[in-house]
Amino acid sequence: MRQNSADLNRIQLHGRVEAPPVLSHSNHGVEFYRFPIAVVRLSGAEDRINVVAAGPLLDRWGAPEPGEELTVRGEVRTFNNRTGVGNRLVISTFAKELVREQGEDENRLELTGTLCKPPSLRTTPLGRSICDMILAVNRRYGRADYLPCIAWGSLAYRCGDLAVGDQLRLNGRLQSRVYTKTVEERTEERTAFEVSVMSMSQKEDAVTG
Image 1 (spheres, rainbow, N blue to C red):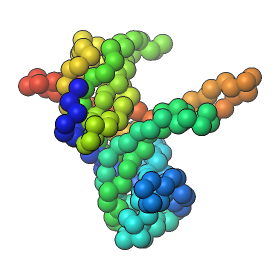
Image 2: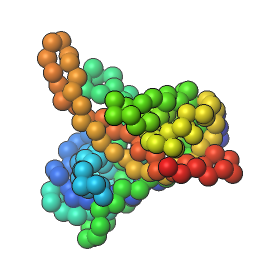
Image 3: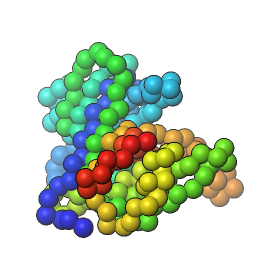
Image 4: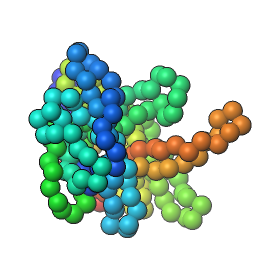
């Protein structure tokens, strides 16, 4: 796996702020804040994406308020939640730019990276083909984000033929999915995040769904 350069990791969201920023964590003396943004798909379904922004960025652009339309440009980031509460893998959008503007809802993601686990091709109960993958996207200085990706239909079959170590370029969206999990005999509602793959290229061969 390449460690000496950063892979492409670029996301642009446009939607509505659903809650004011709250403190997420501090790192090297900088405070980071988290807030959700709702983005409507063409189908009418809604993705609720968590955005993380540094305090200085919010100071520069102003803290977003619920109901505001906002464009967010940045990267998709992951970290492992070791608290034992909620999902283990936490996925969010790390904001590099915030712009208050009106426009069409948008959820556009571009990634390059390395397939780090064998893809899993399966069929849903309704007979639709689906393929699950994990893409390792390198940051600078040797760190990486591990992003769950999902492809459908004919693209799923092509993804199912990929091998660990393949270098990929993906275009798609970051989507949210609500599910229920039983914990100690009680049911909890949780939200999973994954990359819905719209197109993929491997080396010089373009693949689209």
